[in-house]
Amino acid sequence: MIKLRHVERNYPLAKGKFFYVLRDINLDIAEGEFVSIMGPSGAGKSSLLHILGMHDHAWTGEYFFGEAAVHHLKAKERSALRNEQIGFVFQQYHLLDDLTVYENLEIPLSYRQVSKTERAALVADTLDRFSIVGKKDLYPRQLSGGQQQLVGVARAIISNPKVILADEPTGNLHSSQGEEIMELFRKLNHEGTTIVQVTHSDKNASYGNRVIQLRDGFVVS
Ligand SMILES: Nc1ncnc2c1ncn2[C@@H]1O[C@H](COP(=O)(O)OP(=O)(O)OP(=O)(O)O)[C@@H](O)[C@H]1O
Ligand SMILES: [Mg+2]
Image (cartoon, rainbow, N blue to C red; front, top):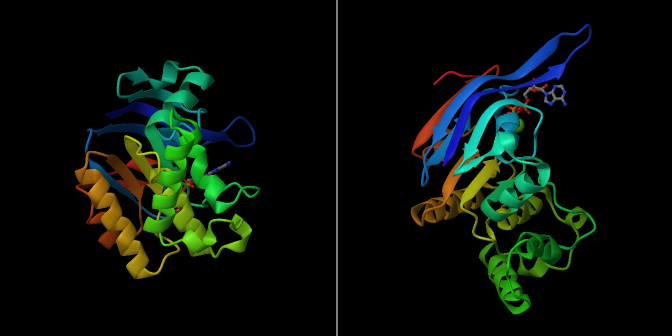
């Protein structure tokens, strides 16, 4: 499903030097896996997830997503692929400030061929599933951090993507809410969704089938 070969990401420093955030990353994630990426702060976990999520394009190497060679795709083709196949939970939520909760949840559906009535039904179901029906007309700034995180997770799963990429999806939640999200991921994974999560929690990692350890930009196990 996902294959990385010799992927590297760096940022230019002064005097023609580079800071390497990711070094020679080789990774194979099969369809239906539930993988956790772990490692210390600054190890490059979010950077890696943003490459997988096709948000970042300033890297070198090869990235195969299903049949697609992402490194050869044009920006438009990459966005189309991402919108069709990937649900992304951002570490910093990234909800659209000018849209209500309801409207934020509608966005991923607007990229798909989903009729207006079906869209309304899906948003209603999702609001219900995440117990945020009462928040549907509020804007992100009117929500607590944890509530924003729930909306971020809801937005990632609403269109039933083939792959979910989640960057510390429960970092701001009470432990029981975090467990509910992990149970939801487990259920989606059993239904065939491939999941890659970044987590600092051994408990969350135990929901997955495999851990990838990152240190200073290298995969160490
Ligand atoms: N725009 C940037 N310019 C320079 N360096 C950057 C930039 N963005 C990220 N980095 C560096 O890349 C490294 C990896 O960052 P990344 O956000 O991927 O870490 P992380 O493993 O997700 O950490 P955390 O657990 O704290 O979220 C860090 O050392 C960071 O300083
Ligand atoms: Mg991070």
